[in-house]
Every structure is written in C-alpha cells, then in structure tokens.
Image (cartoon, rainbow, N blue to C red; front, side, top):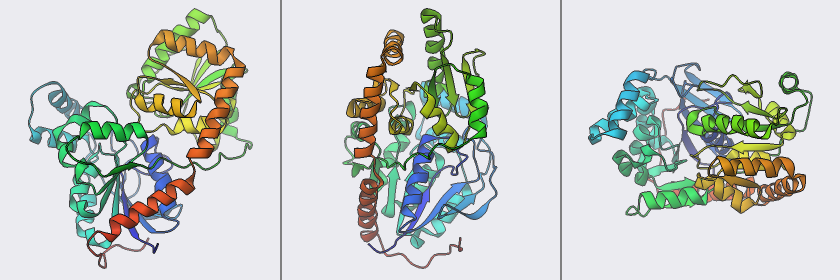
Length: 409
C-alpha cells in the first residue's frame, strides 16, 4: 500500500502523559509512522485535571511522529465544570447544556480546530482517539467523511449523553480495543449500524533488566516485603479508593504485616497515610518493568476500562492479575487469557488475594497462561495488518486530498 497522509488527533500526547488511552495512542501513531506520514495533532496540556498549557506550542518530532501542539484556550474551571456535571447527570437539561458541558470538559483549543478545518483536504485520513474530550467532539464533525474513531468507550455516564448520538456514528470506522467494548457500543447505539471492529493492541518486549537508580530508591522503600502492584493513574474513578480500603481491610484480617501495596502512577486523589502503601509517582518505563518483575501480582481495580494494557504487561512477565470483575473488559481479558482471578466485592477480593499469595503453583500457572495469551494475540503484525487495511479502505473511499498548508516537521 502506498504511503498515506494521516492526522492523528488526541487530547494530550507524550511520554510524560499518564493514561492508558494516550499510551495506546502513542503505540498506534508510532506504528503508523513507520509506513505513512503521520502528523499528531494535540494540545500543549499534560494534566487532564487542569488542561494547563505545559508543552511549548509548535511542531516537534517524537519517535518518528510529527507532533503539532496547539495551546488550550482556557484551563479547566473546576467549579463551573462540576456544577455543569451535576446539572446534566442529575437533572433535566438540554442538548445545548451538554455541548456547554463538553466545552468545560475540554481541552478546548480553537487553534487546533481551526487547523483541522483549514487542512481537512491535506490528509487522507483523520484518526481521533477517545470519544470523551473536546478534541474529538469539535474536530471529528469537520472531517467526518475521512474520520476513524478509536473511542476507548465503556459503560459510564457521559457515553449516554445525547450529543454523542450525533458524534460517534459520524465516524467512517470505529476501532475497538476489546470485544466487550464493541458489544457495548452496539448496545448503546442499536440503530446506528456502526461500522466497527476490534483492533486490539500489540506490545513490544519489555526492556531487559538493567541498573536503575530510581528503582533502587523504590526498592529501599519496599524493603524485603512482598508486594502487590498497581500501575496507572491513581484516581477514584480508577477504583483506587476501593483498592486502598480493601487492602487495608485485608491487612487487618490476615495480619500480613509485611505485605505492601505499591502504586506506580501520578496521584490525582488524596492518599492514605499507611506504612504499607508505597506511592512512587510517575516513573520511566524501565522502572515500571522492574516493579512488575518483582511484584507478587498486579491489582486491577478499575470499574471502567476499554482495554487494560497494565494486565498485558503483567502477563508478558508471567505475573498473575487480580481484577475488578464488575468491569466487563477486565473480566473478559482474564477469561480469554486464563491469566488471573477477579472479584466483585471484598470477600471475593480476600479469597483472590489468599489464592494468589498462598498458592505459588496457581500463581505461576496463571502467569504462564497470561504470557502465552499475549504472545499469541497481542502482536504488532496482527495490528499492523488491520490498520493498513482500514486506513486504505477509508482513504480510497474519501474525496481526493489536495496540497495542504502544513509546515514541515
């Protein structure tokens, strides 16, 4: 297939960005850039809670991807956003109220939207990642005739807003990350005859172990204690508050004075002051994989996921997972891989912990099965083939592109 001109649009982008959807976006953009010309259109924000402009505005290159950053018009006004959220999720409201909520949700960048409108014919395909943010809401309708959407959708209140009935079905193709995400979208939009399929994700092998001063400092905090590991944004919406509560209760009941919970990620919530909880903050990839290699199991407490990359990374290193079974995606990943256990309440969490910490034979078997699943089903060759087919299909059926106004990277 001949090289295409692709614009990839996402709310924030970069190795410092702490988010599963954004990480998946980076994976796909870098894969596409090996064959095609990829311009990554994004904002200058790093933190989704504030949308503060932190990166410099302009054009840079990152791992073969031409990144074009546009400033956010205004940071998130938390008071106004929370007030608008209460109105649309708890009371009667209009479609105009929902659109106003989306602008407050952000990140709203008028310069990014103006660039998309001015250069719609300069690209064969536009790929938007994540349905939830203003970059997709404002940008996708401008180029719907050549738009692919990676919605990363799950069963949460915003997806039921009426504004998304006019956005998500507009995309020429939807790329889902798991069968559960696809099934959910088909239930949510039953009249739309969505043109959607599961694309999944490929994974590169983890880096070989090497000396790492950051990990040495974390290891000193942990000491010789066994530990369970959480990787990702430390947020109530990710189930972290419940994980803290369940872990502390488990310590009290089991009298496991040595067991620790290590949280790798950026906190956006208040943290418990507990001697057995170690919070590392955001760490480099190499440090993260040191933590995975040394943990007893990976905890996956999130109730909302479209794909859990942390689970796949744990399985690559033959570590079992203990997942929130109330999340259909996590439950499905565990069932397909046979690489972990899942729970729906504290008694099941306690039993899962007892099994995985007390039965080495079971833990090792689950870890091996998880590793085999990743090796067989999460290869870049599979993802690349699907991507090329879909990109070619959308590009060939879109109006012909013309010379654009984009500057060289």
